[in-house]
Image 1 (tube, each protein chain N blue to C red):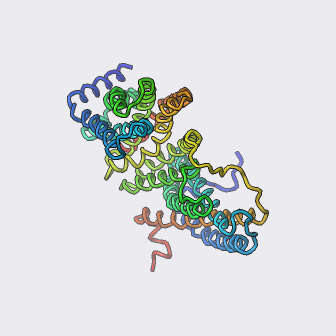
Image 2 (cartoon, rainbow over the protein chains, first blue to last red; image 1 turned 135 degrees about the horizontal axis):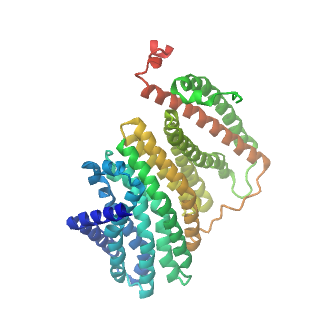
Image 3 (tube, rainbow over the protein chains, first blue to last red; image 1 turned 120 degrees about the horizontal axis):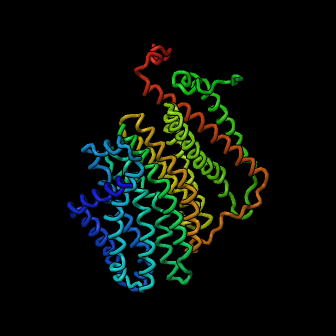
Length: 221
Length: 249
């Protein structure tokens, strides 16, 4: 467990030293969300309808943007090999890295989303559900993304390839995440969607570190 | 210990599988041609015109088998990937990558013929139905697999990375299908139900089954032919390849 905390602290420290990368993804999120009203028009009723989907798609893309740096630097300077050789299970270390990625790339999106939701005239109740769905969904994005990041490690054209691999797998998270807010706004209650999202998160927590580890071992061969 | 009738592991070696595949594929190709001829004859000349859909319904004789094959081939790919990871056999990865283009082809064919069928029947080339959407995502999964394996130069590494992608994908396919299905019911989008099975005339069913068999045989023949090419490409430095009669020319 010590190693888990150590990796987490190290990755958070590294992210803090390179704030610009984190902030770029956040600004990307803000800009993409702000582009939609400009493209569609300022009609409040329409904006309120598309808000959950727009915010979720933007969060998805922003979370994907930062996946590249998840393992790349460690792979380049050989840290990753040392991790693979260490007596601590690699899956545990990978979980620490994924948690650090979520704290630096996912959590800020969750905190920023209600502010952007105000631009779309969402009610405070809908904003709460949106935050809750993002809180459950963004860790899932980090977990699935880690598999893709590990598979495309050191591969030609990794960035575009990563999106091709990861985005189809993000679809269930998008559907249930945006669906939770929409269902609540339609008066159907968001409980079902949020439970499913939680179930997916539990599945991801169990399987994703394992698959990521297998992919990393292939990349290190 | 009783000796098994056939030593399956013998054929896990490319050197012994190559001649076997060479012997088998013409048979499967011939069967595919025979089944396709019979199936097309039934679907065009024997099957009656549909009361509601007219002649346009005949596209299902291509469409339905193509959709079946696209899903089935993905499962077969995942099966070979699991074998490849479990037993560390070289041939399994080659088999997966030989199947991928055929699977992608069938997924595309199914979407294409579906659009051609949808236009006269529903009045739209595309509706966001659960089946259509998940077929589209299946095509994306195939393309992701092909793109990843093509981007990695070392074939062994490409096989293993591809194996992980197809296994992750095969877990996700049902999740994606149900999520799209529930998304669709929430939105009440297309008011088209494809789930209620129409009572089909026996001849129509026969035509469809024959076409499915034809596609099945075609897939096997093409996969075997392609795996032979992959074996030759990867093992070109091996002595047994140099000693092949087709290499002597």
